[in-house]
Image 1 (cartoon, rainbow, N blue to C red):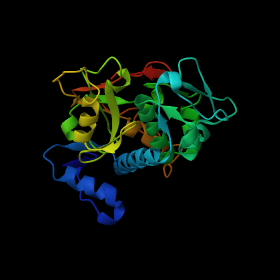
Image 2: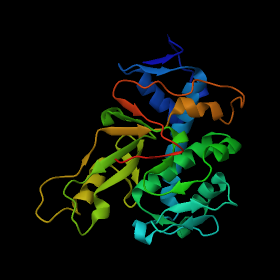
Image 3: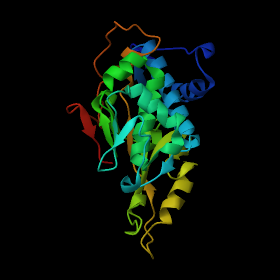
Length: 275
């Protein structure tokens, strides 16, 4: 069931894309209650979820490569590569320009799956909010592992069985071979039911991702890789104040309410999340 401003609602088909309509019908018919503060909040979340899916699928087609931190690379016209293999935005480049270039010149980039996941998050948000706000929120960008700007306000909860498109999920490989430590797990973006984008593997089902990880286990291991229960997603309500079609002067609630089982932390200008 979908509740908006404390009231059940009737959805109108013409208001939604095919993507959003398919999922909203499932939410509407579910016994779980999905709560939104306003119709603008509801529309923004599903516009952003669709943008995250589109960003992941486009990154898969962009020509970017998989590489360890030691062998990572980026477009030197937009980014400086630091000693740890992270990418620091050049001072003369706006955050929007830097993020957009990854899709435009993918063949110049190589990174591992955690960095790819954060890139998808930035790409989806860039497509969903006003560019001037994106540049203001995400200045001084660093792309490295799970470092990200705290204005993404990533929320973490348990419940992978109820994950939605655009959510970040993690497949863990507990018996990874020491010869291939980069395959200790796979950060993914959920695209549709049992379909994920994981950088280095591509677009695949959960079974296919587990099969790929299992090929990089300690010889003789019988402990399979598996999908962890953790789900991560941006604070849709907070970001909705910057929606492209919204009022730049409007101020919604400062953050999505944290529900039982969720973790939402803001620490300084950046946050490091270990999955």
